[in-house]
Image (cartoon, rainbow, N blue to C red; front, side, top):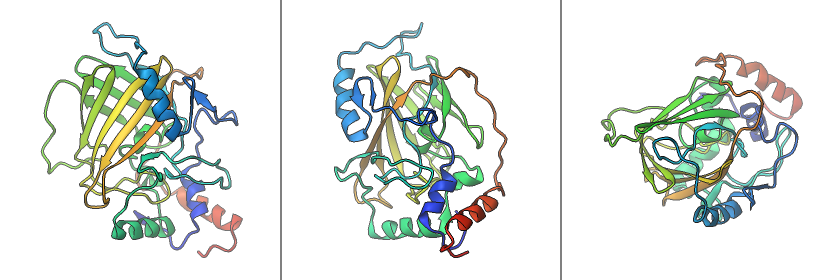
Amino acid sequence: MRAIGSVWGGVLLIVCGLSLSAAQQGGRRPTTLAGCPVESAKFYPCAMEKIRTFEPPRTRDGLPDISGFWSRIVTTEDIHERPAVVGQSAQWSLIIDPPDGKIPYQPWAAAQKDINFMRYISPTAFCDVPGVPRSNFQFNKWQVFVTPHLVLWQAEAAGPVVRRMIRTDGQAHVGSSIKLWLGDSVGRWEGTTLVVDVTNLNGKAWFDAAGDFQTENIHIVERFTLVDRDTMLYVADIDDPTAFTRPWRMSFAIPRYTGDDTEIWEVACHEGNKAVEPLLKGGYQRFPGVKR
């Protein structure tokens, strides 16, 4: 985390969330996907019902074919429910359990979250890797390749090149002493669902730009399931006994990318990016009551 002084939270949200999702670039966010309301708490049960009867397309190897280009319907300013702020629309909570839509922080972690929000800026603003699960809704476009032994995610964004390799060949996790920004992902197919067990995260990534964070003891189990040919259901069960009082669940829809540019481009960026400072100064100018 890089300190920036006492900065009003709205500035942080704007600076860390400048790029709108592909679904929002036209100025409108769809209200339904796969015939379900897009809000996470409503989309999840609706999608689970549709999954029961939907037979997904298959690869030549007989695996559910989730390959192709995908986009996002949610943004990374705050995974909790939030009102509209300057430059960003309102968003529902991505947390479906607990029912109140809030991360069940331990007292010390809730206090640290507030400190993060007021004193620091999201690591992604400095071109650090967004980690998991944020890498699944950080980017405007990414491409998925499915093979019998590997599922590869390759993202395009104003940040580092992110290629996430999910092993599906039965190999065990790497040693616990190895810590990585994207962790170690071991996958398996359960029916039409890709289940991914994620360990070995380094604890440096945030869930969003609002200071919600994890520690290196986090363990995530993700599920990717086609609801129809152009929509995936994403579910992540998250446990971190160091920071949370109980496991919790995040879920949202992932729509297929429908733009004309079906190519992944590398966007120049590097750790230690200094372009953030003038952006922050611009924020101070727009909010004159904020102290430098």
